[in-house]
Length: 392
Image (cartoon, rainbow, N blue to C red):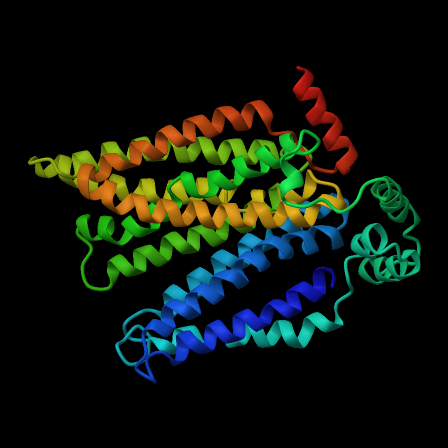
């Protein structure tokens, strides 16, 4: 089927899920929302697993990070657009809300229209399907260059290595051969959710209201947070392949900023409950500022990097299974955090963010200790570095 074929076939889930969610109100059958959302969730899992792999495999090695960041950039841009559409004077009304789901028809149609004209992953054709000529043709088309011998040579070396081993299943990822890469991939995906990003977005509008914003201003401020997420993700996409930076530095810097932001948020929200009016104002406005800092930290590294980093640390014959596992793990972890956070928050209030501080501290330590730099490196070079870290 290939990467491209899987993405095209995945539109079946998008179409069915979108139709059910959009039509639920009009047929007065609201359980269709749950069914449609479940089907959309399956599509998200497939797209989250296959999409980053396809992007990585068609990208030039020097710009893998920049192209890989596009996955998260499109994701957070779509989130911002949906929030804008959900404003009360647009589609956020009792009558018009189904149309928000209907807007999914645009990216679905765009993909169905354009993706068939895109080349298949050359690496997939060469390493998995053993189609050297087709891989060379697609690579020349992608690079707009007739001389792709150097890049094709690297792919051929990976193809030769892949001949000695069969395709890796998800269960085989937990054997000693791939265990370190697998745990590292799951660690970075866990950082996506255990950092508290969804809790921050959940809390943001309430914090802005507590700071004295009235009317639609809290919603506009939340849009500002989402816009900051988009802008910083775009900036990170430019920096991730910078000679003096890279994946590891940006990931650690982002995690560090998020860690200090969660501590500052607890302090600021405590001040906002003070009986002293000046302290209350400091706490309220401080909470607003900290939310922006937290989201900037998330968009610097923990948001965009894990999606393509996973594909950089696994060889082609294990990449599909690894990406599927990592994507599924991210969604399941996010689901569990969503279930647990609200009850905990109802009991201990804003101190619940100290749990995220603790999680971030652990993640920072493990990331610093085990995450290699993958910028500009082949899978073989990354594997060698991981083995070196194991020996050390």
